[in-house]
View 1 (tube, rainbow, N blue to C red):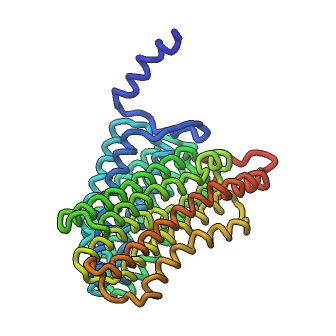
View 2: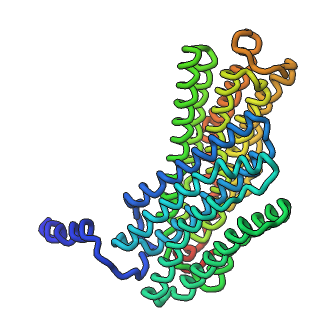
View 3: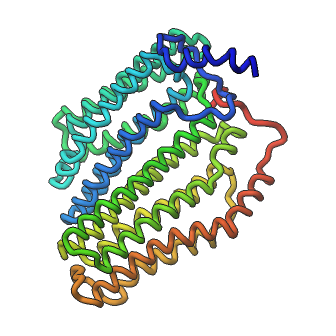
Length: 448
């Protein structure tokens, strides 16, 4: 007890006096490492960006620009998520919470907001047949990532053991940023620009794997990374709740409490709860702490996870727009909601497979069972030939819309119940079958 009291002044000094500190790397084997307040603050700006992208997706779908909207949305989700992943990777390795690190983090947050202002321009350009990339987004992206280049170079100077990989990351980010800038300012044909964007995205995702295999890994902490991804997932699900509340609130102000408003609100909350439940049935942290070499594949699976969760919020906005403006059919509404839910269900199963290193075929019937309500939701308006715009004043039209939305929500419930009743036994069996004779390499000693 006396020792703990003696440590209190030193602990408070570390928390309250953010002088410059050596950036020599964190302990990759540290257990129980938790997310810091500045990381949580940093995450909030990204959820704003997710919400803005979902708003634009819903607006463009409602306007009939489905294909271009999906392309612009994929570009937006990659841009936002990849920048977040880059910072998380660095912070897990070198977060020393000094004044310089804090300032660099705050500057990156400004970049996220600037990029968010570029999202409407991106979606409008795509709707008119142009490239989704634009100078405003690139400026935001540069503000987000240039401070990270400086942080990697600082780590390279102060952490001799990981100097080569730190310099390599700084160079890779600088080269990628140059590519993104050129893609926005060069007068290239749209098809060529889109091809360049795809190549840049693939190169960015491949770079960490290639660099860490050849130069070793910085001292990232697998358990900390698992917590960071889990928290961003949780906050993104919160954006779905916010989207539901906002959309239904607007509908209630316009039409009062209606059956459609109640159905959309209930389905949104059920979907949010089920997504949370299903995601956290994946035992990410304990598995990654035991086998950190599995982190790379697991983290890339989160690109579609974040995008699908935010798109569920967009689908709920589309449903509200259909009831308000009476311009969209029940089929269009259901597709806007069922597709992201299906993507999320499939990605959760894929993430489980990557994490557990198991290709358990007994999982397939559970997956199929999860998809049955989604197929039924899409089939309902087709079967009843409901191709006219939704009209809440017509009981048949309203019943089809409410029934289809309820089926989408049921799919998420089936996933949770299935995992609770059957899926956990698959996890335990995969754990027993995949347990190696000796521990895998600790985080920071190499990537798969």
